[in-house]
Image (tube, rainbow, N blue to C red; front, top):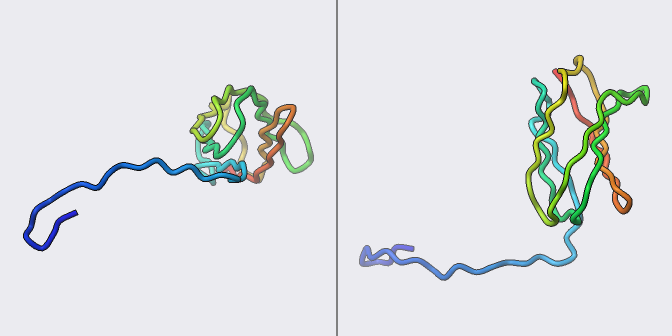
Length: 106
């Protein structure tokens, strides 16, 4: 912060803990243009997760896994090959949680 005299000072750093936040996954970029998919996990429990991608006919086109340390974090999934252009469903799941997101591939 800069006061009226032009003196700069910093405020104290505080930690914010938001309780009762819901778990969420954001896929980026969306639409996907290469073979890498970024996942921003928010409020997710710690654990091993399956990442399944299926086409709209229900056929699984990719399966991988990830280990999440809990809370919020970013994970990158690298597909073995680029998917054909179209709309797909990405499902992140384990024994306790299942979240499905629609993704577009260009």
